[in-house]
Figure 1 (cartoon, rainbow, N blue to C red):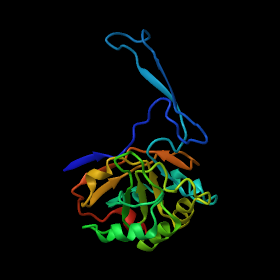
Figure 2: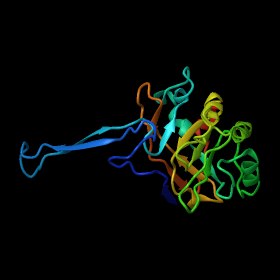
Figure 3: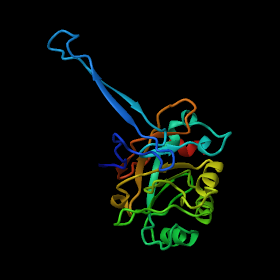
Figure 4: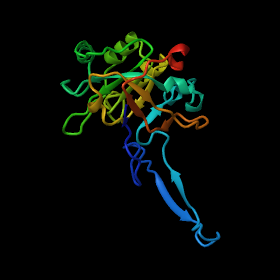
Length: 226
Protein backbone atom coordinates (compact mmCIF):
# COMPACT_ATOMS: atom_id res chain seq x y z
CA UNK A 1 0.00 0.00 0.00
CA UNK A 2 1.17 3.53 -0.80
CA UNK A 3 -0.18 6.83 0.50
CA UNK A 4 0.22 10.01 -1.55
CA UNK A 5 -0.16 13.47 -0.05
CA UNK A 6 -2.15 15.61 -2.51
CA UNK A 7 -2.12 18.85 -0.52
CA UNK A 8 -0.41 22.19 -0.92
CA UNK A 9 1.28 23.33 2.33
CA UNK A 10 -0.27 26.39 3.97
CA UNK A 11 2.49 28.90 4.63
CA UNK A 12 2.65 32.23 6.41
CA UNK A 13 1.81 34.99 3.94
CA UNK A 14 0.06 32.71 1.44
CA UNK A 15 -2.64 34.50 -0.57
CA UNK A 16 -5.99 32.75 -0.61
CA UNK A 17 -7.29 34.76 -3.57
CA UNK A 18 -5.63 37.34 -5.79
CA UNK A 19 -8.59 39.72 -5.46
CA UNK A 20 -9.29 39.47 -1.74
CA UNK A 21 -5.63 39.17 -0.65
CA UNK A 22 -6.61 37.17 2.43
CA UNK A 23 -3.51 35.72 4.05
CA UNK A 24 -3.05 33.31 6.95
CA UNK A 25 -1.26 34.97 9.83
CA UNK A 26 0.38 32.56 12.22
CA UNK A 27 1.52 33.82 15.62
CA UNK A 28 3.41 31.45 17.87
CA UNK A 29 3.23 31.65 21.63
CA UNK A 30 4.34 29.37 24.41
CA UNK A 31 3.95 28.94 28.13
CA UNK A 32 7.58 28.23 28.99
CA UNK A 33 8.47 28.53 32.65
CA UNK A 34 4.98 28.00 33.99
CA UNK A 35 5.15 24.22 34.37
CA UNK A 36 7.29 21.92 36.46
CA UNK A 37 10.32 20.14 34.89
CA UNK A 38 10.76 18.12 32.81
CA UNK A 39 7.78 19.86 31.14
CA UNK A 40 9.06 22.86 29.15
CA UNK A 41 5.64 24.38 28.47
CA UNK A 42 3.60 24.19 25.30
CA UNK A 43 3.47 25.94 21.94
CA UNK A 44 0.24 27.34 20.49
CA UNK A 45 -0.52 28.95 17.13
CA UNK A 46 -3.24 31.44 16.21
CA UNK A 47 -4.23 30.93 12.56
CA UNK A 48 -6.26 33.52 10.64
CA UNK A 49 -7.08 32.53 7.06
CA UNK A 50 -9.76 32.16 4.42
CA UNK A 51 -11.84 28.98 4.43
CA UNK A 52 -10.60 28.56 0.83
CA UNK A 53 -6.89 28.73 1.62
CA UNK A 54 -4.47 26.18 0.16
CA UNK A 55 -5.93 22.84 -0.95
CA UNK A 56 -9.59 23.06 -0.01
CA UNK A 57 -13.13 21.77 -0.46
CA UNK A 58 -15.86 24.03 -1.85
CA UNK A 59 -19.21 23.55 -0.13
CA UNK A 60 -22.43 24.15 -2.11
CA UNK A 61 -23.09 27.45 -0.28
CA UNK A 62 -19.84 28.85 -1.73
CA UNK A 63 -21.92 29.93 -4.75
CA UNK A 64 -25.41 28.54 -4.13
CA UNK A 65 -26.93 30.71 -1.41
CA UNK A 66 -29.36 28.00 -0.26
CA UNK A 67 -26.72 25.28 -0.47
CA UNK A 68 -25.23 23.24 2.36
CA UNK A 69 -22.33 24.63 4.37
CA UNK A 70 -19.16 22.63 4.78
CA UNK A 71 -20.15 21.24 8.21
CA UNK A 72 -23.32 19.82 6.63
CA UNK A 73 -21.40 17.66 4.14
CA UNK A 74 -21.55 14.02 5.32
CA UNK A 75 -18.00 12.68 5.85
CA UNK A 76 -18.71 9.80 3.48
CA UNK A 77 -19.14 12.24 0.58
CA UNK A 78 -15.41 12.96 0.52
CA UNK A 79 -14.12 9.38 0.85
CA UNK A 80 -14.27 7.11 -2.16
CA UNK A 81 -12.67 5.67 -5.29
CA UNK A 82 -11.10 8.17 -7.68
CA UNK A 83 -9.32 8.22 -11.01
CA UNK A 84 -7.16 10.95 -12.55
CA UNK A 85 -7.82 12.44 -15.99
CA UNK A 86 -4.72 13.80 -17.77
CA UNK A 87 -5.65 17.12 -19.37
CA UNK A 88 -2.16 18.57 -19.67
CA UNK A 89 -2.34 18.31 -23.46
CA UNK A 90 -5.44 20.51 -23.76
CA UNK A 91 -4.74 23.58 -25.90
CA UNK A 92 -6.27 27.01 -25.38
CA UNK A 93 -6.81 28.84 -22.11
CA UNK A 94 -9.35 26.40 -20.66
CA UNK A 95 -10.41 22.75 -20.79
CA UNK A 96 -13.29 22.33 -23.24
CA UNK A 97 -15.77 19.45 -23.36
CA UNK A 98 -13.98 17.88 -26.33
CA UNK A 99 -10.67 17.92 -24.43
CA UNK A 100 -12.32 16.18 -21.49
CA UNK A 101 -14.09 13.54 -23.58
CA UNK A 102 -10.92 12.74 -25.56
CA UNK A 103 -8.83 12.44 -22.39
CA UNK A 104 -11.39 10.18 -20.70
CA UNK A 105 -11.48 7.95 -23.79
CA UNK A 106 -7.72 7.35 -23.33
CA UNK A 107 -7.95 6.50 -19.63
CA UNK A 108 -7.24 2.83 -18.77
CA UNK A 109 -9.63 3.13 -15.81
CA UNK A 110 -12.75 5.18 -16.57
CA UNK A 111 -14.68 7.29 -14.03
CA UNK A 112 -17.78 5.58 -12.65
CA UNK A 113 -21.09 7.08 -11.58
CA UNK A 114 -21.06 8.17 -7.95
CA UNK A 115 -17.25 8.09 -7.76
CA UNK A 116 -14.64 10.86 -8.04
CA UNK A 117 -12.72 12.36 -10.95
CA UNK A 118 -9.50 14.33 -10.40
CA UNK A 119 -8.34 16.64 -13.19
CA UNK A 120 -4.60 16.87 -13.86
CA UNK A 121 -4.25 20.17 -15.75
CA UNK A 122 -0.95 21.53 -14.43
CA UNK A 123 1.78 21.49 -17.06
CA UNK A 124 5.56 21.44 -16.64
CA UNK A 125 5.62 25.26 -16.53
CA UNK A 126 3.46 25.10 -13.41
CA UNK A 127 0.32 26.51 -14.98
CA UNK A 128 -3.04 24.77 -14.71
CA UNK A 129 -6.37 25.44 -16.41
CA UNK A 130 -9.96 25.96 -15.44
CA UNK A 131 -12.74 24.17 -17.29
CA UNK A 132 -15.53 25.44 -19.55
CA UNK A 133 -19.30 25.23 -19.10
CA UNK A 134 -19.48 22.40 -21.64
CA UNK A 135 -16.88 20.41 -19.69
CA UNK A 136 -18.80 21.03 -16.46
CA UNK A 137 -22.02 19.80 -18.01
CA UNK A 138 -20.24 16.67 -19.27
CA UNK A 139 -19.00 15.98 -15.74
CA UNK A 140 -22.59 16.14 -14.52
CA UNK A 141 -23.62 13.73 -17.29
CA UNK A 142 -20.90 11.32 -16.18
CA UNK A 143 -22.53 11.23 -12.73
CA UNK A 144 -19.36 11.76 -10.69
CA UNK A 145 -20.04 13.03 -7.16
CA UNK A 146 -16.78 14.94 -6.61
CA UNK A 147 -14.40 16.73 -8.99
CA UNK A 148 -10.90 17.73 -7.96
CA UNK A 149 -8.39 19.87 -9.83
CA UNK A 150 -4.73 20.78 -9.45
CA UNK A 151 -5.58 24.28 -10.72
CA UNK A 152 -6.21 27.05 -8.20
CA UNK A 153 -9.91 26.97 -9.13
CA UNK A 154 -12.33 24.87 -11.14
CA UNK A 155 -13.14 27.85 -13.39
CA UNK A 156 -11.20 29.81 -15.94
CA UNK A 157 -10.97 33.16 -14.10
CA UNK A 158 -12.02 34.97 -17.29
CA UNK A 159 -15.44 33.33 -17.04
CA UNK A 160 -17.22 35.87 -14.85
CA UNK A 161 -20.35 33.69 -14.67
CA UNK A 162 -18.27 30.99 -12.95
CA UNK A 163 -19.84 27.99 -14.75
CA UNK A 164 -17.72 25.39 -12.96
CA UNK A 165 -18.97 26.36 -9.54
CA UNK A 166 -22.54 27.06 -10.62
CA UNK A 167 -23.08 23.91 -12.69
CA UNK A 168 -21.31 21.44 -10.41
CA UNK A 169 -22.50 22.74 -7.05
CA UNK A 170 -26.10 23.08 -8.30
CA UNK A 171 -25.97 19.37 -9.13
CA UNK A 172 -24.47 18.53 -5.71
CA UNK A 173 -21.05 17.73 -7.17
CA UNK A 174 -18.43 18.69 -4.60
CA UNK A 175 -15.28 20.54 -5.71
CA UNK A 176 -11.72 20.22 -4.40
CA UNK A 177 -9.18 22.78 -5.64
CA UNK A 178 -5.37 23.17 -5.59
CA UNK A 179 -4.51 19.47 -5.44
CA UNK A 180 -0.93 18.35 -6.01
CA UNK A 181 0.92 15.21 -7.18
CA UNK A 182 -1.87 14.04 -9.51
CA UNK A 183 0.75 13.11 -12.11
CA UNK A 184 1.82 10.28 -9.79
CA UNK A 185 -1.63 8.66 -9.89
CA UNK A 186 -2.25 8.45 -13.64
CA UNK A 187 -3.64 5.16 -14.91
CA UNK A 188 -4.83 3.76 -11.61
CA UNK A 189 -7.84 3.83 -9.31
CA UNK A 190 -7.11 5.12 -5.81
CA UNK A 191 -9.00 5.66 -2.58
CA UNK A 192 -9.36 9.42 -2.17
CA UNK A 193 -9.74 10.69 1.40
CA UNK A 194 -10.44 14.40 1.81
CA UNK A 195 -12.15 15.31 5.10
CA UNK A 196 -13.04 19.00 5.59
CA UNK A 197 -13.21 20.60 9.02
CA UNK A 198 -16.68 20.94 10.54
CA UNK A 199 -16.64 24.75 10.35
CA UNK A 200 -20.19 25.83 11.12
CA UNK A 201 -21.70 27.82 8.25
CA UNK A 202 -18.42 27.95 6.28
CA UNK A 203 -18.38 27.91 2.48
CA UNK A 204 -15.27 25.73 2.35
CA UNK A 205 -12.45 24.22 4.35
CA UNK A 206 -8.71 23.66 3.95
CA UNK A 207 -7.97 19.94 3.69
CA UNK A 208 -5.05 17.53 3.52
CA UNK A 209 -6.27 14.98 0.98
CA UNK A 210 -4.54 11.68 0.47
CA UNK A 211 -4.70 8.96 -2.17
CA UNK A 212 -4.31 5.33 -1.11
CA UNK A 213 -3.27 2.78 -3.70
CA UNK A 214 -4.30 0.15 -4.50
CA UNK A 215 -7.90 1.13 -3.85
CA UNK A 216 -9.43 -1.40 -1.44
CA UNK A 217 -12.72 -3.04 -2.37
CA UNK A 218 -15.52 -1.75 -0.15
CA UNK A 219 -19.11 -0.50 -0.09
CA UNK A 220 -18.23 3.14 0.41
CA UNK A 221 -20.78 5.18 2.42
CA UNK A 222 -20.71 8.10 0.01
CA UNK A 223 -21.86 5.88 -2.85
CA UNK A 224 -24.77 4.51 -0.82
CA UNK A 225 -25.94 8.06 -0.08
CA UNK A 226 -26.20 9.02 -3.77
